[in-house]
Image (cartoon, rainbow over all chains, first blue to last red; front, side, top):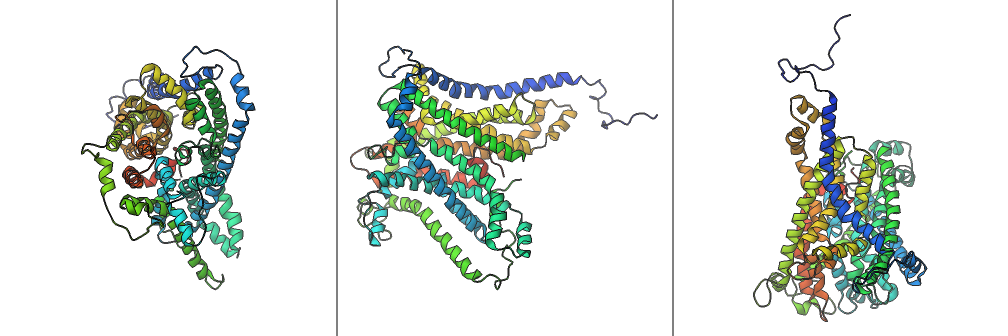
Length: 316
Length: 303
């Protein structure tokens, strides 16, 4: 037998390799040490600023604590939770939130995918078009909310002005119960359609061209191509975008706060907005905490779905 | 598989090879599609144009009924009002812009310093329950701000961080760290670990290998990630409005929102302030357009 061929060829004259290699153990140990020192600062911050506050909220949710009264927190068991889950007020807000999430995310998906599809069929000016369409998404909710409030003003708003000029009547966008929620959905759709569009566009441009070529050799109809090639290939990515938007829409607060302030009446109060009222206007910190914990539970469930699906998609 | 906007946007091979005779009205359909896209683009952009227009209109024209689309007097008064107080000093708005720069800048730097090493460690080492840890990290980002702000408010009241820039910086950092880790992990994954192995064969320690070989390659990714963190902090409203109150600490979003508190609202000023506020975001977003998909999905989707 000849000498075993070395698996790695050391550079001749490399001094380091002449010393017997330290057992891999020490290197791995230092790797572990590095990993811990690099990860733990970020982890500690998250524990202090995200986990600890939630645990505190969890504790408060079992008490009748009020941030302004300042007295000791009395333990009242699941009192807050039963109060919230049986409250008709909360049910109304849950329904409002549901209508808003379904309406807004549904509209965004249809519009966003539609625009992406139209853009993907263009050969010229795609870059300019995409960039222009993306502008609303990058704006702060404050700017978006304020500005639409101005545009939807019943008296001097430009929207009513335009409706008037084409002979349609004036609409009290933000001061009527029905239209206020609709306005909220429209504004959110305006801001977030680009989000769906962006992701759908990525999916559409990633569809291999040869599939279309093969289909056109087979003389497949346009609709058939769309249904059997485009949609199945873009769908997984589109679903990611939709789920992401649904979680975000479920938590919506700032747009409501600025655009309608929950009104008129309580017609545009989402769950987040209601929590804010209970906590900062009613000062029922304990109740608000229980309310918040329930919402967090829903978010955690939604996020788990989202992340698991994302993971499946990455591995598949 | 990295499809950036630029790629998605590049003029690929024309797909419409089909002879026009085969599909009746192929040309007419194309015209229709362009028309539809134009209408949609106008609808999407109109509010932005209207905002810019309002910001340079004289007050008389701002409240004109019916609204004046073209025929109005141009003025820069509103922009002056954004920065200069009526008495000639610095306006409260300009102070809030400065606060925004400080808070967004500091929290971005902190999030980057904490997040990048963590992302590298998650990418390179066999960490226990890595997937669960990463999921947990991203989950914290999805918490409803209104829920988090209640205990944070109580916490800050205990330690005197209410109405304090440091308090805002801390909470923004905590919100940006998950994003930074997810986004950067993607960038680190793209740098072959073999570079570090090779450097270590040359006698460098793992840390030196990271510092000298991997980190320089990560700089463009770090820049893009930091820009997104900057945008998130800059635009943030909920924490800013509940955790700060005085003019000297308040950041721009609550300050701009505060303009509509009174009985009458100076919409020209609101528009000008909004333009000043939004302009840097749009410029920055344009700079990182290649990474927009990863950025807006918090680093979860990279295609």
